[in-house]
Length: 371
Ligand code: GLY
Figure 1 (tube, rainbow, N blue to C red):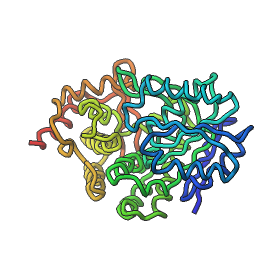
Figure 2: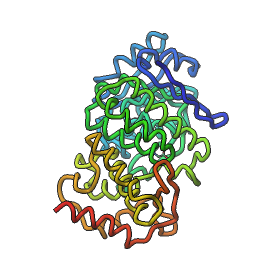
Figure 3: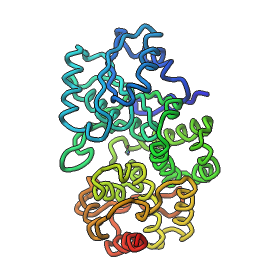
Figure 4: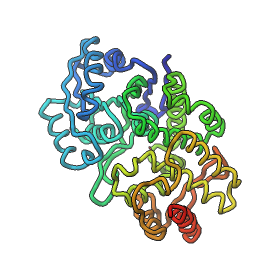
């Protein structure tokens, strides 16, 4: 089964292909982009072991030669040292202005390689080959590329759209369960922000998907990409609607900062907890029914995911400190923290701000439940 989602951005439009076996067919899909049969692949050491041979064989099958650089796996790679290493390696490999860079990996590699492509010779094209659920449904689509600064995550970067995305759902087979579920945090976000029917479908089908139901995986990745493609086509550079994709992220970024961007909390786990908190806050503000946050939490529990602050191991700072950490978010406008809140499941909207006391109270209640 093969699905195609089109991202409609004028002369920068591109397709996202979703299905099993796309690594093996990569050459046939990438060849039409190439003026000469040669690409440079950026990946990480873990993905290089699991997926690089299949990708290179798929390229060779279409007569495309490839060179590859495997960077260390992990978030620490997403900074200046590995970024400049990657850019200089691409120059050493004599990647020219019309050549194509291939990003094979999860969000770290996709963001770093996309940014490298954005600045190399003032911009070369690139193809995203995402190998994690999180990258397939979110980070590989939409053209946000970049690296982290000591001052915060993703603070250095550029909008640079890929020319093609190949989401081989077969690659998810080798993903650790925890990483799969973290990626699922971004999937459930789409249902919660804009498609109540999709959330209903996930309640029924996502447990089987986590157990390995391949058809359900393709359906979930496809629906997620369609929703993201629609939003990005409306608002590529996040002047408005694209901020909806940040549902749960304001809380998440504070929690990630509080846990030192460590293994205590993966990004997608923080997104899931953040979505539950955003619905709790929405209910307390009288925006949505009290049953909505309960339903969100029940589904996340069903999936065996982290649901609230009590599920994060180790100490957390006070509610006030967490609130202050939200103030560091790059989405703060004129000092106001922009929350994405909801009128119901599938009906999120962007606020200018929310009453500080209410936000602190929501966090405080969950922190108290930890003891
Ligand atoms: N991950 C949020 C966005 O692409 O806008």
